[in-house]
Length: 149
Image (cartoon, rainbow, N blue to C red):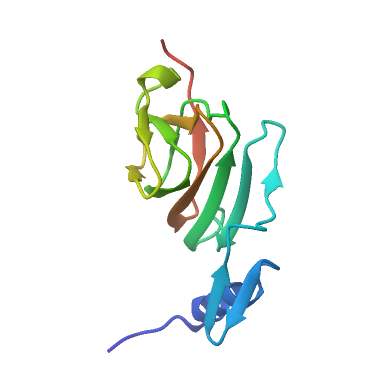
């Protein structure tokens, strides 16, 4: 017999129907378009916006990150697996603590990468702006590590 957590179900439904002004409701579905997307921005120029849920809370989440040309993260790892799909541009992903973008793997639109829990990496844009979509199960923490040449 299928057991449903009604609290989690209600929370999920509220998020689907109320999470953003960019969402268009079409019956029971929610549609989010990339054009006109209102990004949150920090002092690094890297922009982020939750699409569904939050990596800070329990449950499934989806968010998007936009890197400006030359923008990147420093070496870090996450407490949970994260699944990344490139939406726009060429994203560069490094799988060590070097932060050497010349050694990073270029991933083009439609490409996918998993960041396993505990695996040190860095990523960003080299040639132009990049948009990636990140999915996972929260809560998740990110731990910065020292850059190692």
